[in-house]
Image 1 (cartoon, one colour):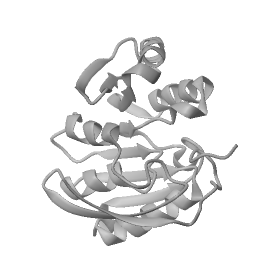
Image 2: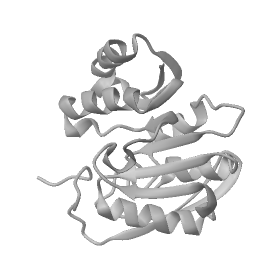
Image 3: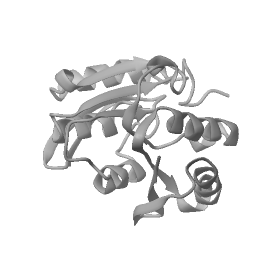
Length: 199
């Protein structure tokens, strides 16, 4: 069965435009069936961007599993002096994210790449990996995501992510503690928890 965490997802071809106001900016996103939360802003992703721990100086960030680009583009617009790489395994998501970078005028500080987890950014180190992880893809992938995030972080860098409390919090808690030693809660809202684990 195909879902949004696939290279070539099944899509009905239905499209939509999402207009939103986030972190002081009006934003517009093109979206399409076959993308995670394609018809509206996901509440977990919205909590995450409002809860993030951000540095004072210019840094490189990774929006892992970017979908149509909501998290990375919103942050790139709000923090124009920082650099953001957006990646997704989903080819449709990557195409839309690139279009949305142009639409929201953040091409100068964003790059969009296609690939499975960290395949397209090998050799790079980030100040922070930011993600709304694909829980439906299974525990093995989530564990790989957390371990590889640790490996791609600079010293004192962080993995910042959001998870629905009922569906995945206990599983992710164990994985974060195993890999990072500890984690901190950044925020809670509408059944979601935003978490940070620092290297």
